[in-house]
Length: 215
Image (cartoon, rainbow, N blue to C red; front, side):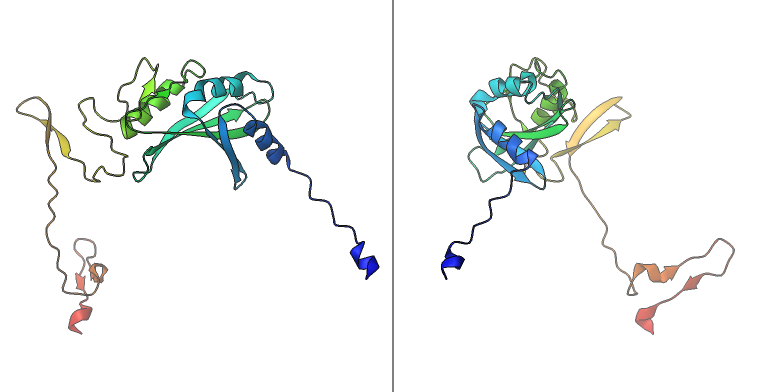
């Protein structure tokens, strides 16, 4: 029994390189929490301290995130701050990635990072266009995927899948016109179990029509 009581407990496993990097990121000012899921590191950051955090992640040689790969949004309508703004960073020199997430609502702006990564202008315009997220300090915040006269933000969860208007070119007016969406579809009725049961061969050949429902 005494020998059993003195059995040594095996030491905990050594942290992986990703876990050590997560601890390093988590110690930065402005980072609330970090998480590793499916081998990917995510840091949830304070919106007000975003610009300082991103500057550190780009310029500090421990991180060296030279590239901003993407900025995108996620809509959670049930939350007060319904939008996640997601930044995907890549360090080419150190070969690691980081996802940074901040939250906001439709009225509170998020600091633009276009001066750190000029490509951010395209991504921030897309996020504004599709979700309505405002980026302060962004000099070119205008639509990029929808038409300039488009109303609303189509990737919000409360935006109807059909939209509100449809666009067509009017030959008489010689211009593009907006009209209310009209989705009409004739009722289809088949006299057999599957529409694939109707088989028409090449022109000139005998027409074969199998009707299982009548057998």
